[in-house]
Image (cartoon, rainbow, N blue to C red; front, side, top):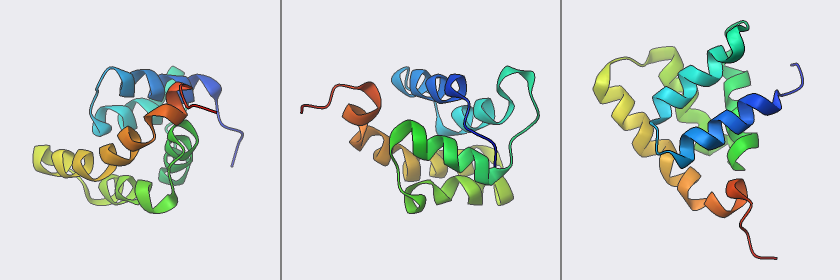
Length: 98
């Protein structure tokens, strides 16, 4: 796998801060900057890096990419992944107390 693009990582953080849906964030990360579409494993790596998440916390993204579709699936994806992102907000916003 190639090195992660810092711009894609920052874009995910910005979208999360704006309250965008996980589906929007995944689709944006997959096709950012007009480059080739990322494989699911790469998308998971971006979410893990951007938000300090575990593989278990981002696995629903891989499932959604493989089988997802429709608003119900997008809502379920958001419900599964967003709590981890929110829980780690201090990590990805850089506001963690030391």
